[in-house]
Length: 318
Ligand SMILES: Cc1cc2nc3c(=O)[nH]c(=O)nc-3n(C[C@H](O)[C@H](O)[C@H](O)COP(=O)(O)OP(=O)(O)OC[C@H]3O[C@@H](n4cnc5c(N)ncnc54)[C@H](O)[C@@H]3O)c2cc1C
Image 1 (cartoon, helix red, strand yellow):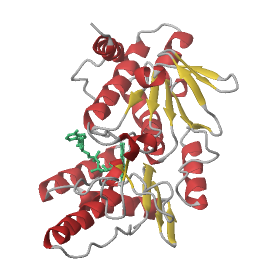
Image 2: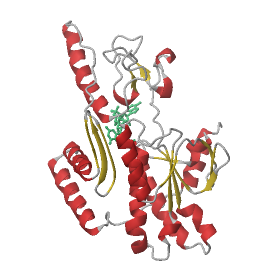
Image 3: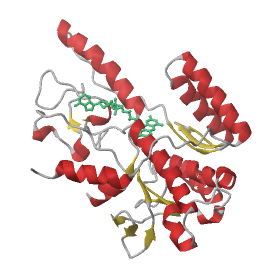
Image 4: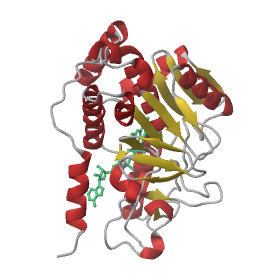
């Protein structure tokens, strides 16, 4: 609960924007601190969870430090900005192949990210993050990218709720115990022998479950037999930074520049609308050439403390 209160999540676009302003505001705040010790908490970024989101964020923050910090904040020393990536698993990108995971670790090391593996977070009070075993880091910036919880609407039977608030379904995505309610994507837990923990929380699962469920509902209406859902795993991609990505595509595995091209291609064609794709492509080319990912304007004053206070007021009974 305490970590949830103080750490920054990044599950939605508004949360990602909050995070952007928190990073920029804390860099600005650091300039005003006279001593290295006072600057340190504003310049230390701790990412909890070394899955694709944590790894991609660590890479992005390391690139901000390596290519942008000196330009935008000449008062700050690059070496003072620290990026930590923490996970209780023994490797980064736990769901990827060993070679992909090893390559990601090497890339991050070279970019100056400090990786803390086999380390469990104990607490974070907004000022200091503590790990099991006694180590701690003074920081204002803890970003939580470990695990997603489903949002279960009221009315779903408690018996149908699995770990992480996912809704138990049968093999046609029908909510356990119901005849005409379906759960698909991240919120669905289709527990079978093949998938004892359900399916991974990725877009492909949601898309494919959507397609199969649509067809099955039509079949049910027509009184035809339904077809069980079968996930077609097209592979996993993660980008770490300029020319650096990991691609695990079944037996084909790539790391580095080629994987990065695949990542860009897949993400570009997945965007909605041709205009969007062209604009994003132009922006990417401009960022690549200039080493500058756009303007870093602060257009809203984000204060985590205010959000926390609001949370507390809302949760207080009258
Ligand atoms: C930072 C981040 C990066 C990711 N990167 C990747 C990636 O690179 N590749 C990949 O495959 N996956 C990625 N994912 C995972 C991917 O986004 C999800 O697996 C996918 O969005 C799941 O789709 P969904 O439709 O199940 O759920 P969502 O996309 O979460 O959609 C659910 C929608 O339901 C709405 N909703 C919730 N409750 C209610 C309610 N009671 N009434 C009405 N509406 C409601 C929510 O507001 C939301 O809009 C990433 C996730 C995150 C957080």
